[in-house]
Length: 328
Image (cartoon, rainbow, N blue to C red; front, side, top):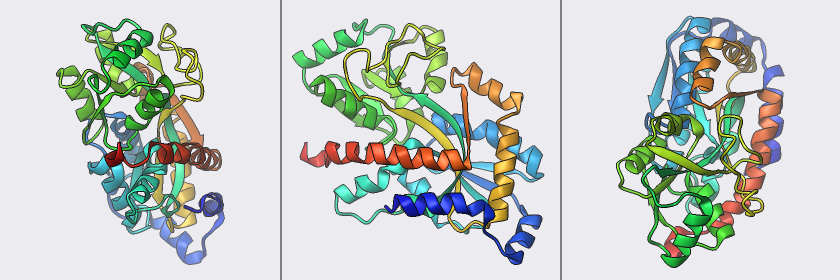
């Protein structure tokens, strides 16, 4: 992936466009807009997409349809968005995993079905540190308890994820490497199914963004042992960070952001950016996120493009260190 080319193209997009592109933007949208979410309902990407889609409908005057296209840890939906006609009628609400999934494909000598530089970032919506979740009936009262038990029973304590190398798999790999433990990975088709499996006692633990797990913490069905952020969150001030627990550099965000296929006319990108600025200033939207313990983390395109590039640069080496799963 040429990250310099990605960043240069992303920052140039708002000022690119001849008269034909401007005319197209003036008419856009000419039909309903599809917002692809590369996961089933119930996860972080879906939490971000639905309130945003409803708000965009009011601003754009066209229906914005959330299209859940799950599979391969997000690869299928991301690839579908990358192949879409770059006319502004297909968007992608992506998770952090979209930056490094192509590198995971290269581990298996496969040609990735998309590359990061096939997208133009529009805006970041959420950016939550992942949280380590156990059920309320679990024997572990702290992350230290979990680590001690895992060392006694390597490969026996199971965790669910949103798919191989996905947004909930990678933080667990980082945790295992830092703690010197071995857990049993059980991948699902998305964060929603991974959460359902955890609540249904099909697996022992899981990693989630705060939004999807908060209702279950509030109901008493689950509790949190740690978060993957750089500091404790205001929503869960009693939950320590992995860094606090002594696991240096174990830091991971499950962020969600809006992208368009590369080549979408600059004036359309500019209108989308302005629409997202309005969306993320709308209390009807932000209150949904706050209520879910997933506070809004809005970034406009220039800042978001730099953020995406930096996150990819930080996490791609982690993917290479994880290596091929069939060799473990």
